[in-house]
Image 1 (cartoon, helix red, strand yellow):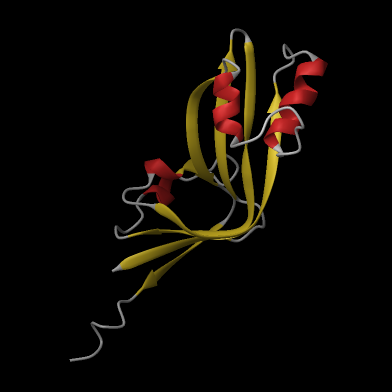
Image 2: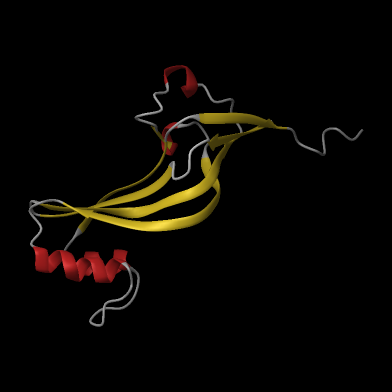
Amino acid sequence: MQYQIIPLEIGSIVDREIFQNGDMEIKCGLVWKLGSVVTNYKPSFIKNYDPDIGICIADIKGANISETYNGEKVIYFSQTVPEAMEEELTDIFYGISRKFSGPYQNIFQDLEWELIRSESFIFGQLDIKEIKDPYLSYK
């Protein structure tokens, strides 16, 4: 049996990466307008789940993001990042830099930003549906 976890609010699935360089930090990634998470295990996290905090998808046994729609890129900087550097890193992140080309993750690391974590989260009110295997119903 498979279980589909569907957020009931738009923008409740997030892919986030955290980069650090000394005392500076970048949090960036995608906020998905719509999507779902699937797992082959009955979700047990729901009894302790807080919709305001959410849960890391890696903490849901066997879960992965199955469908996503209309992702929006977002980037945030710690206050220790100088404004001129923010502008350059933002251009790299959105792929509009005239100076750099390629995936922003590679460029950030080339510029001595260390990838600390890459995580996916789901939060807000959730609907959990059992997905029955259509092949099991035919005998």
